[in-house]
Length: 177
Image (cartoon, rainbow, N blue to C red; front, top):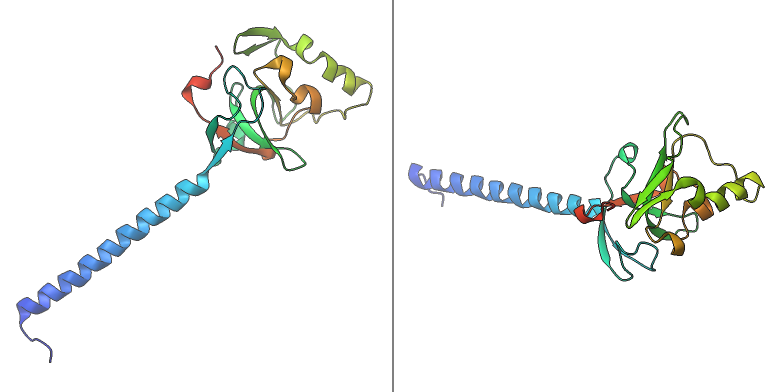
């Protein structure tokens, strides 16, 4: 038997509306949590190549939804190598899309400033002798570990492409000193 009482009918209508609003909020927060989960990746530092900034075993969060054209010198990134492994390094030079940018004379890394030519001497020799392929002149990133004496980076394997970047490690304290 249905109630014809207008007050009771209005209460039921308001309850149905309240349930719909509750479900809408629940769905919104679920989608928000899902988006947050999809936009970050937890990474663990392996090795000593980023010391003194990052240490073996440090847990980091990499933001995956960064625009790849906004990567800048000094950014610490996680990138995927051709074998599928992931490395964490600092960007030290960005070759623009036209290939017109020149490497800097000096590279600022935690602990000091080092000359580009000295740091990339072996890499330049390997390219000149054909042991490493000549890099694309456009849209590449040169990455390097902060512990330059204990890092395999662009000096060994050459520059990386922006599409290899998995995410940017965003921690305010990671800027070079």
